Image 1 (cartoon, rainbow, N blue to C red):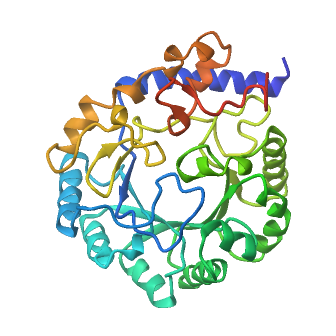
Image 2: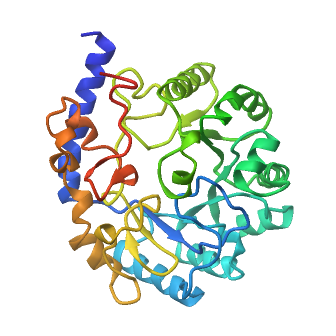
Length: 359
């Protein structure tokens, strides 16, 4: 075997051993708060179908009570808060909630479309203790606005990014791009634009067959699109630009560690948990809201009890459940693939890179 592939194989086997232990000894590192499902954009690929607030969303006092509870049960050193929506800034009590998180000692970051981030808002985010932010830019101006259903969305988002950069108070300002069959051709021009602004990283991920994206099958990436995207990321990284692929999938020996900084591991339920805007407790917010993977509600359950005693689906080898995966020679490394792209009716992955990136 090629020496590089041999080294990767050894590392992946070590990670597999580590994951076996993680299933029985999970560690809460990332806790996602879905503050609201309200959004001022209408992205065709939204996995959560965000548009308007859900009825009976958690109040500011309820969110603050959860933060008090998490600090009591887990402390604040290891657990990072990831704030998302919808568009989190649409909550009028956003800064009340996040200032409380800062006062308790939590580190936190946010995903946003950045259209509401004026210079004043960027300063208030710094004052509230925000450390990181990821902003969605899904193409050149016309494409971005069309995909996100929001006129001037690109202009306002890029203005928001520059306001964040100018504030100079954040550990990371990241751009995230969801690649589909059409906008993939714009990656080179986007690359030239992003090289001209002082972002800390560009996260490039492929469209997934979840949420509203299921209504646009013609925009799903083809195998050729996926190979083109990964080759683009690989070349950009060799050029020294901080572009990374997300945590979506196991990519095989040719691409693992070439398009992101370390090997693939689905964090859902072992490092990562989420609380939805109505208080449901689950693993990753990209996972469909299926009863199989909703393990309680914060209004009646203590989060620590759920984290320590539930999450059964996420703490076993899913490949055991899938006839297609059970005898695959890669199953030890992918364990049935990512939880967010799992078919919970058929118990099989919706996306597998075998046959696309590797055999």
